[in-house]
Image 1: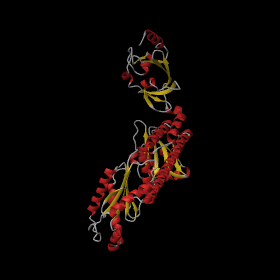
Image 2: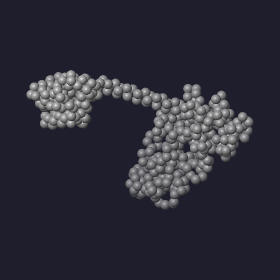
Image 3: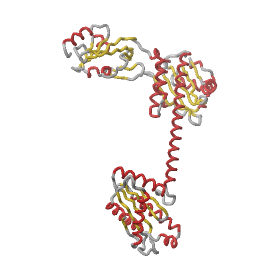
Image 4: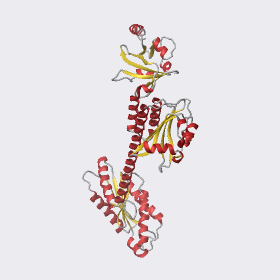
Length: 479
């Protein structure tokens, strides 16, 4: 202990007629009185370390979450310094009332009172139902199995069953599948054997389900002759008693939840029926909500896809499949503003296919369209950076927006354009500058400010393009 006062305090505390654990933060040790040592099967020693307590796990009575007992001393208790936990031992489950308090000299204490020496989950079905309901309210695809399994275990336990399960019908309604199953200790599971069962193989069962949404049998051996198929299956699985409740979506039977007793017969009570029906309705509502969410997500995704498709159509040139004039105008305007804020340069390239009218007149408009597509694709492929944009400006004229590119680098880019067009090797015997298709290129590079207008930028790049044409075509000119 950290000082004599604390040691004296512990000598008094350990005499309390409760289980007492004290944590000394200064020494990072625990003190445990004899009652607590017996409760947690600890050796009799003066103090303990965290590793000595690492095997002690408690289950929160309400949330069903597990935690180590040492965690109770570290930020677990907040507004409420009292909570109930379940301690599982080999022969029993103990319900514990745990109280926490801070003491002077960086000490804290936990006092434990044993409320019940043999806890059965039936004692608190209301809390269990509350937990199931909370879990299923906002159920998601990724945790649906966990919550269903918890619900089946809960209802199976409180109904004193040996097995509980969930079946769902196939989409065509002709077969059923055991989707989830809980079995008690020592009970054989049959989930894998109960897949794609034909409804026609269980006529008596499904006839009862269709009429009343209920199948309640206290003694399988007393089933009528009409239920011979059901009786055979039940006896093969060693089932002595069975209780099933139908699950419905919008009044349609889509599956069922059920419990079996294997070890001994059970006269199902009305309380069993109420509990199973309550859990079944919760599961049905959860599945309905999950389906609604999935349908909503699908609808939302369809809307997103439609909007993306519409946006692409609005901003894409129908012939060349690159950005159109509308997209170009919006992009240039935005990039001018962004570069002005960042005080970065921006470049605009205007390029025109040389003697394209002659090409069209002599090779035909169909080949002319193919040329436009190939040139557009080449220009688009050169624009590799995010923010670069190649667009069809109109007719045989194209424009390229290059944010954060100065005069020197724009000149290199223009040379690269000519190289890529030359690689296409598109024959043009009616050009006076080359036997292959060429481009005339003009560009304007500058650092914009808040007064810069897109129109003047286009005009300056267009003037440069005009100069490239006037000086012989297949040229690069800078404004």
